[in-house]
Image (cartoon, rainbow, N blue to C red; front, side, top):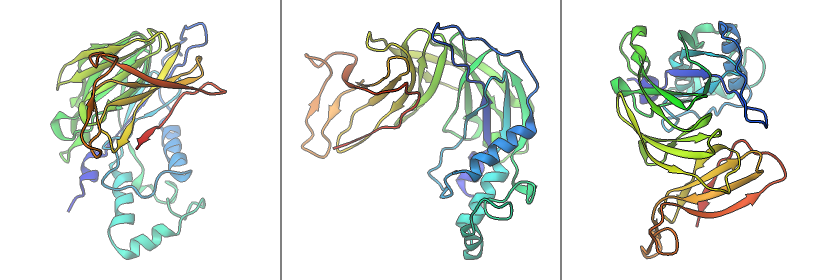
Length: 309
């Protein structure tokens, strides 16, 4: 019986992340053919250097990654890798004991691809995208699965992924750009809104804004935008987990501003403490509310936050 993860965790997108210098311009490298062998080595370096070996049903359906200054977008089938991890960790006691012999030697788990090439991810297709800056893949499998690739000019391409999100035979011709949505310039981060898998947040460094867009199979529409004078150089956002309360929270990362800023963009409900509800702003009717900021002695580029009450 195939585990759900083996059916859906088959796609890896490698896109370029082109961080602009302080002046704001972004210099793109000339298009070049991807070094597929290097990509596979990078995947294995990541897996051998700290990939979570407890990979299980709650793992994300897709695994997006980035290849620095590479214009071609490389689509890779992760199913051989994921199937092997599932087999080693979630089938028999004998396989699990083999996985417990973990280490950095090629013959130790996770095995080097040179020792056991059967679980090496497979290159499927290369698609050229102008000045790509961020990438994400949908949480859905099957025919409705989509991938999103943002470009420096603020366009976010919507791609069908063919059979990479299904068990059917490969259908490379189905991997194609089927739609587009416009956000702010230089979108450096795409993340999901928790609890709404068809809604994605885009952090646009060029326009200093965060945009939400809602997706369909062939289209997407921006449904809200956040701009704030406190956001000097937003590069990343994390949609925060909560416990004890129910409210949409995000943590914005300000690179040159050297701070993290907290925003609420929906009602606050004390779900486990009586059910009281509070809107945003003085009259409870604002679209957003800043919950404060944390200045740090450095330039942050990523954050993972949890609100626990």
